[in-house]
Image 1 (cartoon, helix red, strand yellow):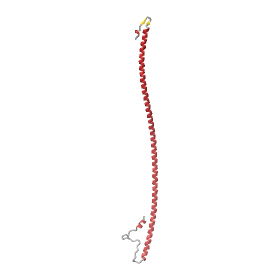
Image 2: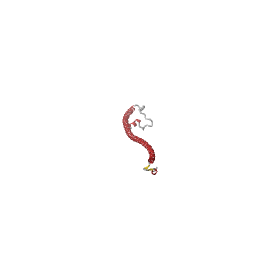
Image 3: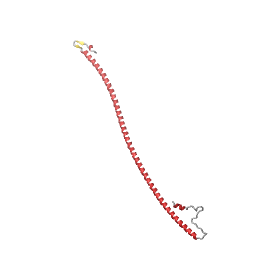
Image 4: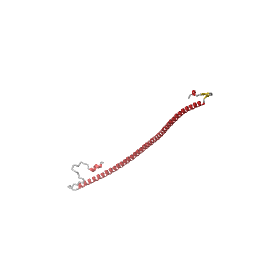
Length: 182
């Protein structure tokens, strides 16, 4: 309804016509407001849905962030633990290496002492054998002299030899004399 559609009376516009006009404007305004309210409600619902979606995304991102932080902390602590373990293994390896070297040095020293003891015993034994051979050689010489003296006093037919010479060995040195030169 428009303003020119209002009926005029003696004293101005007729009440009924004005009331209809007002009602028409009110209905049109109400319809527009209802449409706006419907649009606002729809926009509000869409906004609420969007807010819920964004809040869900934020919650998911927070959970993911917390999981990543936890993973980062675990990785960092694992790395630190691995470094500590590597340092421990390095120290333990160095300790074992030192211990093995000390044991090896001690074993070498023990073996060297044993070899020195054996060498000393061999020298003592060599001296004892040389002494025995010299003593034995002296006794043999004495026996040969005694035998030579007895042979010179004995009749001519008996030729006694304590150490008979083998044929072809007159120039050879007796074996016991070889040992004296050791």
